[in-house]
Length: 367
Image (cartoon, one colour):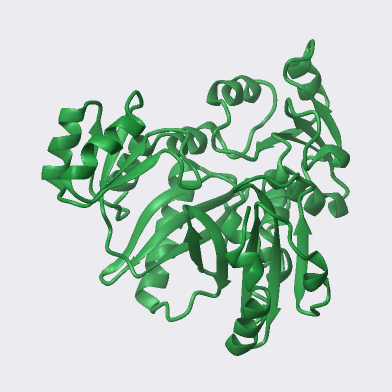
C-alpha cells in the first residue's frame, strides 16, 4: 500500500461511503469542504477552504486526494497535484465537466453518442432544430445534473420556452435518441493500469433522478456487452484514469449510445456495496491508494437498489426484510434530495420483483 491518509474534496454521501469503505483497510480520511455539518462529519477531520492556511493544512494531513463531484474546481486540482497526487486526474475532471468537450472526446475515440451542436443564440437553436430534427434535448454545457439545466424541444412551439429557461448559458443541442432503456457501466482502474468492470445496471429515472437500478441488466446480448466494455476501457485508457469511472448509456435497437460519463463513484453503482465481492467505494479507494483491485462480480442472481428521495419513510419496513440493506446519509428531508438508498439481494428475478413491490412506497412517494 502506497498511501494511508486519504483526502476527499467534498463531504457528502459519496465521501461518506468512500470513508466507510476505506476505514476497515486502516486508512484515515480528511475532508475539504465548507459544510458545517455533512454526511461525512463524524468520519474524519474536516478542513474548511475558507479557514486560514486551509489548503496547506489539508495537503500536510494527507498522502493522496480524490473528489466526490465532477463539479470540483479543476484549477484547485491542478494546484494540489503540484504537491500531492490527485486521482482521478485533471483530464477526467475537465472532460466530464463540459458536455461539448465530453461529446467531442467520445466522437474522436469512436464512441457512439447522439448527434449534437453548440448553441449560443436563439437563431442557432432554431438552426439546430432544423439540422438535428425534432425532438431535441437542449442542455447547459456545464453544471447540469439530476435533470437540471435541460429542456426538451418537441415542436417549434417549445423553442421560446426552452430558450427562455436556459438563455445566458453556453448550450448544447442533442438529437433525441430513440432508446428502449437506460443503462450504466462502471469500471475501476488502478495506478498500475489494472482494470475491473462491474456488471451493467439497468436504471429507471423519474424527473431526471435515478429511482431504481437493477443488476444484472437483463437480455444484454454479447455484442452490446462487448460494446459497453470497449467504450469504458477506451475512456479509462485515454484519460489515464485512476479510480472509478461511469458511463451512462442508452440501449438502442442497433447498439449502445453513450449519454455522459462521471469520473467518480456513481449512484447506479450503490448496489455493489453488498451485491458484489468488492463494492465501488472500496475499489475506488484501493485504486487511488495503489492497492490490488477487488472482484467486481455480482454475488447474487438478482440485485436492486432503490434511491430514497425527499422523505425517509418507514425505515422499519426495510429493517424487517432479511434481504434488504438500508443506507441513510444523515441528511435532513428536502424536496428531491437523496437521503439514502436500499440494496436488495435475491436469488431469482421473481424474488427481487416481490421485494420491490413490498418497498414500492419508497419508489413512488418522495418529498
